[in-house]
Length: 389
Image (cartoon, rainbow, N blue to C red; front, side):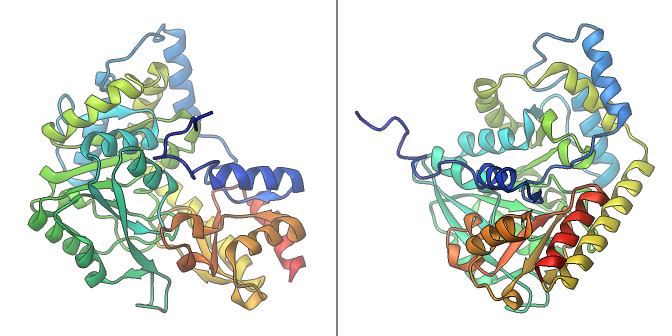
């Protein structure tokens, strides 16, 4: 029989998140692998979704999103960043940021086009690029100490990747899995290259409200970039409702029309009552975001100090809810083997980052932990890691 899976997706198999969760369940390990909270989202958001169900909002929504939600998204960007997006023609609600990524990449990339990514990267990027028949090209973000005191990339390597076939550049800031927040100087370099070579930037900003040091600057706010940027964000990370799968894109009309062409044939419309819940979320007062950041700052400090006490070299994240940690002091030099050791012998699961690279050897010497967990979960993991030492 001929292979059933297209050659474009052959070799991807099961995601690392599914595999690590399976191993963690078998070992009854504390699972700090996949990045979802083990606590629930705000009651006022849930109640708005429930009220929408009871009010009969159970049919297809407008393809690009219900009017109150796209208006709320528009108001958010004006309030937070001073960026004006037209709710009718420039904002599209998707079933999570992952669908937004696939719709954008599928709509903008032809077979043979090249897409620049910063490695390590969220694994969906590579799959979406291959599914579109495009080719990923990677510039490495190096760990602290290799190029700079923090996570950094070589500007000359980035410049050297741009060719006449380059179509798209994917920028993720705050960055998963490293926790890097791109600086204004780095964003200016990316913008300069995009403008000079007529590139579109896909800006994945789902961790925009989880910044502990530095400042999140949307690249669309830079001169000349609004017209060539597709900004993606979502509800899940900010409101601890990852299972709701409410995401969106913000882009000028021509790019939005392209994204919507793909979106309408992927999901057509996102779950209607959950969109109403998202409206309530985006109308949260400023105190919500202040408390969110304070809570995650405390978790970051708690777990980071616990990792240090267990012998890890902690790369303190500037943003996101992930901590990258080196483990060379613990006698290992290969991330996959070390993760298996942690699950088996310490009862703690994390992610081996080499799976997030085109060049896996660059990610062999550190691992990624998710600290978006209750304090008792983090204390349990710290206790087990301490006993391992």
